[in-house]
Amino acid sequence: MTRTTRRILFYCAIALFVGVSYVVLVYAQGYKYSFSEQRFIRSGALYINANTSASILINGKLKASTSLLGNLASIGGLLPATYTINVQKEGWSSWQKKVTITAGFVEDFSYVMLLPQIGQDKENVRQEIHDLLYPITASPSMSPTLSHRPSPTPTPWPTPDMTKPYYMNKGSLYVNVADGPAIQIADNVTAVPSNDGQKLAWFSDGQLWVYWLTDTNYQPVHRVGDVALVANFTYPIKAIRWFRDNNHIALDASGYKVIEIDTRPGLNIINF
Image (cartoon, rainbow, N blue to C red; front, side, top):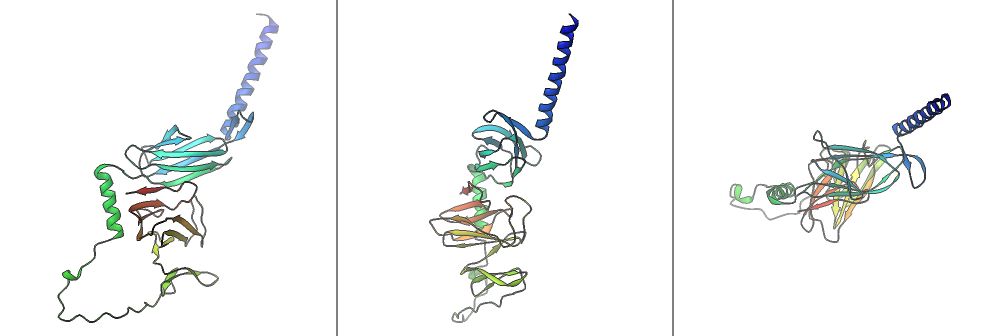
């Protein structure tokens, strides 16, 4: 091998090393090559935390599975675009969203819920929802028999405790604010607070609403005073309760349902 040939090979090796190092460095900084645009573009990522082990599909293709520890999954290197994300498990309900990935950001879905849809496991969940919506109360037959029952009289409105973050007054829902008088946000409803006391839910006919009493520190971000119409059914809602966590609601509306309050495109409703 001549000196010239060795020199050419040496310089080619240097060029290859520099090129590979550049590509590795670019990828390490969150960039990915877009063949459609023929340039490196900073990528985004997707984070999913489900209540059970499941498979994650992006645009119909299997990309990952939640881990055995915590049922978490993190998928990086996604070019900025809108994707269809599915979380699936055989025999369980599925979860789907239209997710827009932004360069340099992570789309976080920390409260993905799947529930059994076959067999006794489904019936157990249905019974759980029924007991939550319609808890057993003492019936008149369980009380001592009265020799005389007074005639019914109109029940007076209870005196509201206006020192609480929210209160009911004559059937209307009011929320206290820091720098002004209480705000009426709904009429002729019954408010149901979340288990953590940070949100209120109520319904009117077929509409399900949520009000945020505090800021959230997870996506989708909400601030104190945010109001969201979660769902609008064509049939009436009969009862609601928060289900298991502070991000899902069980309701009786043409059958039992569990609905997420994450209103990003693709609202997930599980029917029972």
